[in-house]
Image (cartoon, rainbow, N blue to C red):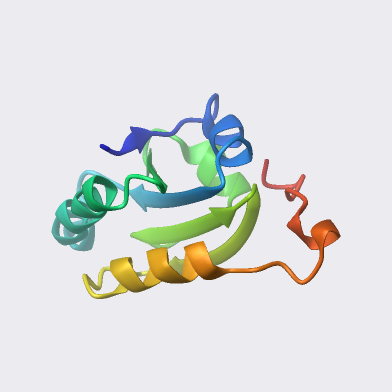
Length: 121
């Protein structure tokens, strides 16, 4: 599966309606993003059960502000609509398979903790 472009209009829906979502914040003139984008796209093809979304930081500035994204590239992971991982400055190719593995294995301590976070969505 390929990556999905995420915008202010489809971000919340995508995160809320899929069990496993990775979100990659990038910008066209970001050198680390240039190196990391092919790795992220390969992960999308390899891990078809995990939605791989991409947000253009320059275009979606309001969404970036809501998500408190200030450093590029940034990776976020959502499980059942809840943010379970966020790290800025990630451009390490070795992290993708491990992040996908941990996202799949992540267990909420109780069902209430699994509720989506209203502030971000």
